[in-house]
Amino acid sequence: MSLMLHEIPSSERPRERLIKYGPESLATYELLAILLRTGTRDISVIDLAKNVLKQVENINMLNQITINELKKIKGIGEVKAVELLASIELGKRINTPLPPEQIVDTPKKAYLLVKEELQHLTQETLVCLYLNAKSELIAKKTISVGTLSQTIINPRDIFKWAFKLSSIAIVLIHNHPSGNPEPSQPDILMTQKIVQAAKIVDLLIVDHIIVGKNRYFSFQEHNMLF
Image (cartoon, rainbow, N blue to C red; front, side, top):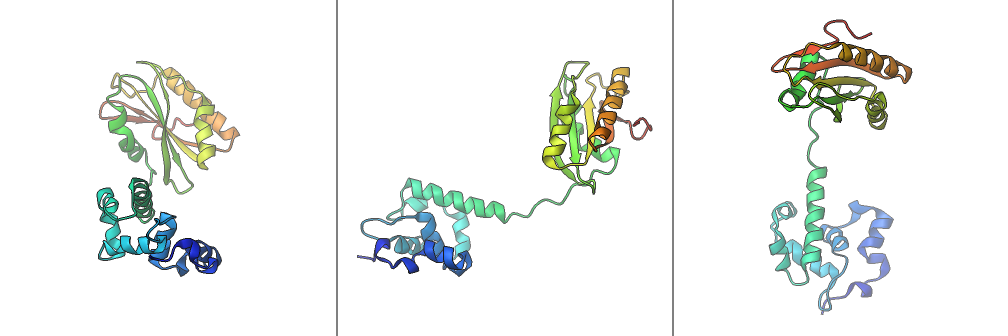
């Protein structure tokens, strides 16, 4: 019978060694043993971890192992198999390169970012793009959905995301279901209200874009941000 974990001197147990020396000091099977937590009556968790690794040619092949393949290993039930797969997937995602930063430094770029999402909607919808100091997109948030011809907008709903996301610049975008992007008088008054409110809390409204059918109107391009 293999040595059980409780028979291993505490100084040699993977958890204790990780705490003392860091994860880099552990062998792959020891890291795996920590995830498995326990062995069985007949096999220690260390040997169980080694058996799992024997099922693959190398550590990278664990990325392709399935739940059924894991469950075929003596000592691996559904719970352990699910936990291992979750850990493997988390490792994959951590190592997935981040997408390049999306620069939104022109009205057209902002428009193209939301064109397909907004131009066919039958209700006016306000979307905000939250940018950093380099005009890099931090997030895109839908703020409100209104009626065929009106969107109810509260500046606080816009600004709260800027504070949460540590954004300093905002692009306002909403659609006109009619297809005509020319601003109405309420659009102009609303823009002025939001621009002035943003100044009070040290935020910058970069633009307000109205999306129509395959065209847009930019307050920035028409020098109407004041």
